[in-house]
Image (tube, rainbow, N blue to C red; front, side):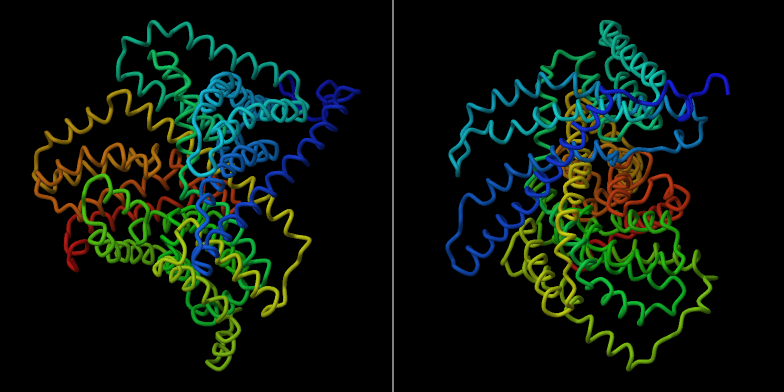
Amino acid sequence: MAGQLTAVDPVALPSGMLARAAFGFDRALGGVLEATAAALVLAEILILGAGVTARYVFHAPIIWTDELASILFLWLSMLGAVVALRRGEHMRMTGLVSRVGPGTRAVLEALALTASLAFVLLVLHHAMEYASEESFIVTPALEISNAWRASALPVGLALMIPVGLVRLLRLGQPLAVLLAVALTAGTVLAFWLLGPTLKPLGQVNLIIFFVGLVAVNVFAGVPIAFSFALATFAYLACTTSTPLLVVVGRLDEGMSHLILLAVPLFVFLGALIEMTGMARAMIGVLAGLLGHVRGGLSYVLIGAMYLVSGISGSKIADMAAVAPVLFPEMKARGAKPGDLVALLSATGAQTETIPPSIVLITIGSVTGVSIAALFTGGMVPALVLGACLCFVVWRRYRHEDLSHVTRPSWPQVGRLAIVALPAIALPFIIRAAVVEGVATATEVSTIGIGYATLMGLFVYRQFDWRRLGPMLADTAALTGAIIFIVGCATAMAWGLTQSGFSQSLARMMGAIPGGAYGFLAVSIVAFIILGSVLEGIPAIVLFGPLVFPLAKAAGVHEVHYAMVVIFAMGIGLFAPPFGVGYYGACATSKVNPDEGLRYIWGYMAALLVGLVLVAAIPWFSIGFL
């Protein structure tokens, strides 16, 4: 058809020595990248595991383990992001891309790559400058230059250039690529020329860049991380005099939270549980108990997230520990992948207040609210939201056909429980290790990995050594995709703060009529919006000191307000199209984000009902204080 580009167009097919050389280079580079990233995941496991063993078993702490793990983690995240780019595994919305004609789709696919490369080219020089400046800082434990860590940023960004160019070549659509390059270059030039016009607009620029530009990129299929990064870079470059080196610094800050180390380790633990047969054992007993109930395994998913939540301090890590255990059997019983990822996302928001939650700890540290009171207050509100989710599950699965499911006898369930007991013990062992101080929330996953390895080798007798390499490489790619999103979201959060948005928000909320309930209602709306663009910890650090005194002045108990704020941010964090947590759940589940859109709104409505109940009835939050 005229005007469309198709894969059979002989002009579009890459051929010749240049293409073959490029593809050969890409295969070699990809092999090196995946092997290096996999080795870094293994190194993180060994380093953190050695730290736990030395401290708890030999009572001789190794002071440099956390520092070395942090250095290697930034390298793991950046190289993992490169691997994810090469594989096409960065999270993005493809709802529009999948619904247009072949010619337009080819342009949008190329545009997703050219826009990503545009950010890399714009920020690469600043990343090199940032690494150079970090060379003057000496790390406290290892006493080496911090440039060894910071160099991961320019190296990773530089490696994205050849990887992205080869992916453009692989599209086999030269006209689409040329059009995408022209669109990208034209957009960059237009914003640069419009800079003097945009600067006087003040906070109107927030809508132009952080709503308009982000939305255009997201719906055009540009990866979420690069959409956030482009908007932040463009805002700072076109409307402020802020040194653009700051973008790299905020990216580094977002990707360097030590608690995020739990993400690759729990991702790997989830794969290990599946590989060793522990997942099948757990599913066997859970299916025996609830498999004959309509929607039974969905109830199990809600309960499992409640039990394991807070172990790692990261919702993504929690989901990575639960999803591989339950999803295969749920799919086998006919559940739609989109419904599963939608429910998983909803449980991520539901369990934000379960201790030991890093968000609760952050609130306590920046606002002065008792962390013990926050831990006590967080249990019941999560049950309220869980009950609301269970109602949706009941509605959706009340007509589920279970004629093919045989209800096992109690002796059969007992035998399944004995087989599954070592696997079921894993979350309790992990939680006990945190509570008893054996390991930190970052380190505890290494105990789980060690335990799962022993169970696989000596109890379940399933341990395929040949799968370890691919599992480690997959873990690195998924980690890179997730952590790069967090880093770019942190940079965006900093940009919003510098705009004066946070101070304006505080003044506006302070003038709200209606007393305590009016303040809570506006807080819910505001923090759902904030949660959709900010990761929980940066949002709390930025806005907690501003709004908690206002809440107290309005007559709202601080613990009660903390629960409302956390759940509101959680709903924003896990609600598409902007919620980063939703894409993290999709990445963890390996489900296309588009598949969950049909199902997630019912769960989000249930969470909103639960949030209103928690806000309206303070007893849920403060009844046991």
